[in-house]
Image (cartoon, rainbow, N blue to C red; front, side, top):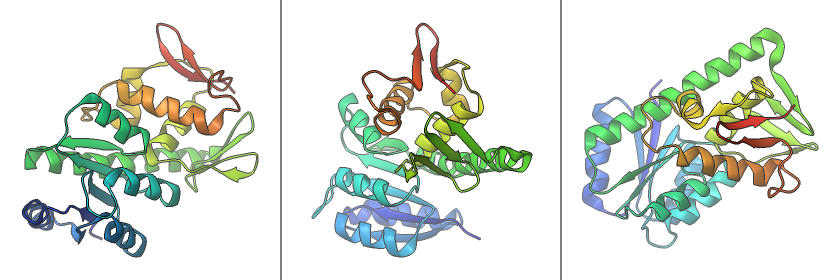
Length: 234
C-alpha cells in the first residue's frame, strides 16, 4: 500500500512541484494551504508523513506541529525559508523529525522523506523483534514502555511522545545503564543519512526529560555521562 503524505504549504508553485514529484515516486498525496486546513487534513487523512511549512496563513507551522504532537506520532518534515540555528532548534523542540531549508534540492527532500519513512519502519521492526522475544514491556522507574503498542506511560498516564522521542527512549531502555555517544544515538535512532547533527540528540534528550523526569533540571533517569553521551538508569 502506498504511503500517504500530507503537504501543508501555502506557496502554490512549491506545493504543486512537491505533489507532482511525490506522486511520481509512488506516494499518495493530500494537500493543504494553511495551518488550520493542514490540521483538519492530518486528523481526517491520518498520513504516514507530513511536510509542513513554517510560514503559513491562519496558523503557523510551529503551532500546527505543536498541536499535532499532542494528537499523533506521525513523522514531520519542516520547510522554512529561515536558516538560523535557533529556528532549527525551535522546530526540533516542538516535535519536528527533520528540517529542510528553502531553497532546497528536490533530490535531497525526497531522500529525507524516504529516510524518515524507512527509519520508522526499521525501528518498528526492531521493536517488534523485541516484543517477539518477550521484551515488549520495558520498565524503567515509574516508566512503562510498550514497544508493541508504541506507547510509553508514567504512573499510568500515557506520554505524548514524538516518534523520535519514543524511539530514543525505547532504544535506551533496551540497553539500560549503558552509555551511548551522540553519534551512536544518531546512527541507531535517526540513521546514517540524517544531517541534523548531534544537537538534535541534545534537544530530544532535553524534551524527553521534561516528560519523564519529576525534576527535569535534576534528572535521575535519563543521565548525561560526561565525555561520552547519555544513558538511561533502570
